[in-house]
Length: 340
Ligand code: AHM
Ligand code: MG
Image 1 (cartoon, rainbow, N blue to C red):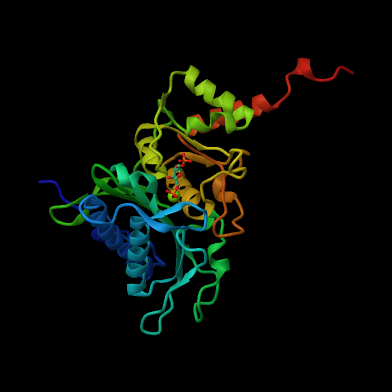
Image 2: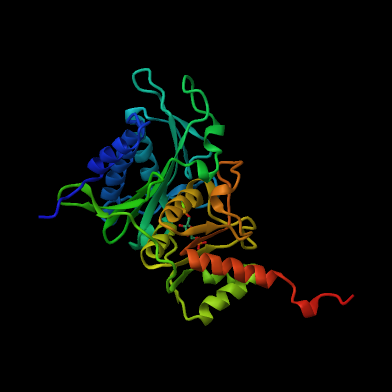
């Protein structure tokens, strides 16, 4: 009989592998697992109750906020408040950081960054959405509340990151920097069960994922690269939820791009709670993540909570090839150089 390993069992077992671990990170990851189950329950019955549709407000980025975004945001905050391991949260849905109370006089050593419901335009039409999270160790003294500077850390400082995909089945994928593992929710027992051990992204694949509707708004070298993908007969897939698009690429190989556009000259996606956690997971699985200036995402300085970045993520050979393509395209051909 196959041995089933639940998320909780796996997290506790992994804690023993870290000599310095004292259980806080373990508790925090378990809180995230509980929140994900609650959000999953609501996502699954979204068509049955009056939770679909707009909340009526706009978030920091000017996007229409959906009711389910608010629900997911509240549930994650509630669950992370319980154990006291987390001293603060930066969320896509909140302009500023949220301070969490310590429990039993104990202040959390960690802070969490999250997009509680990524791809929210998909909700009303029953298409996959996700949650993205990242965990940092605090820099400030844990005797007081966390500070903004605790969140403004490079992606390379992440101690854990993950996503939950609420799709045909619900899967939680996370890393603590020692590989990537995936856990599928078994609704009959209400547990995330280890289903994908030590995930590895294929070196290359047949998919490219980009909003081709913005083609004319991309820089010329990006347009040429997208033409090149099309010339290679790569298959275009774009769900409009980064978690879903990345999940396909993690399993089957490919490249995901959200370049800067005229509307979003710095890119649309958020560095702190979208690009960095996904970059950490993909790199841990053997992939690569850069911006359109060809800089490694996880080395970028984070100077504000809702900072945007262009992003190119995927199979290592495809990201390398994209970089070479862009460099070659940017170099003036020798024949075009002024003659001496
Ligand atoms: P959201 O977090 O507000 O839902 O927006 C992020 C999403 C990504 O998941 C997705 O890749 C992108 O925005 C889609 O944007 P667009 O509709 O411009 O292609
Ligand atoms: Mg998002």
